[in-house]
Amino acid sequence: MPEPVTRWKAKNGSVHDTFEDAIVNDLATVLGKIGNGDNSMTPAIARQIVEKGDDIRELLSALEKYNLQDAARTARLKEDEQTALLPKTNGVAVAPRDHELVINA
Image 1 (cartoon, helix red, strand yellow):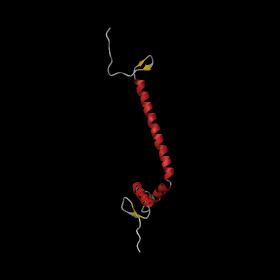
Image 2 (cartoon, rainbow, N blue to C red; image 1 turned 30 degrees about the vertical axis):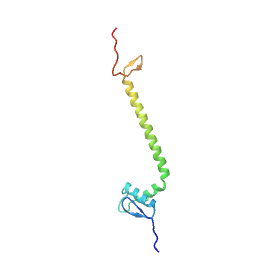
Image 3 (tube, rainbow, N blue to C red; image 1 turned 90 degrees about the vertical axis):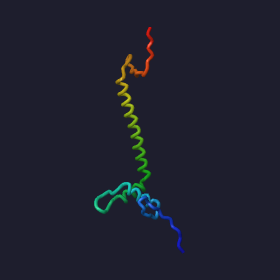
Image 4 (tube, rainbow, N blue to C red; image 1 turned 135 degrees about the horizontal axis):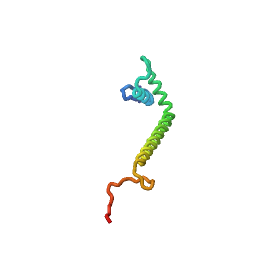
């Protein structure tokens, strides 16, 4: 008697026995062809990415954190450069005001 089976379809339409195989196929499609000739290394690289996903996510998280810190550091440097250009009163930078109240005595 036939039994129902579950198969997984990747974004490119190929059908796979496991969800992981479909994900590996989608990832290989995203990566594109890697290597020379007809023997692309992409499927093997995609499989390694899936298998080592936790380690890769940790590294990407560290990179993202570094990039955010670097962006903040750059913003502080730009702010310091802008502050250095402001006029100073008694050695303290004074930001110009849009409107000042002037009282003629």
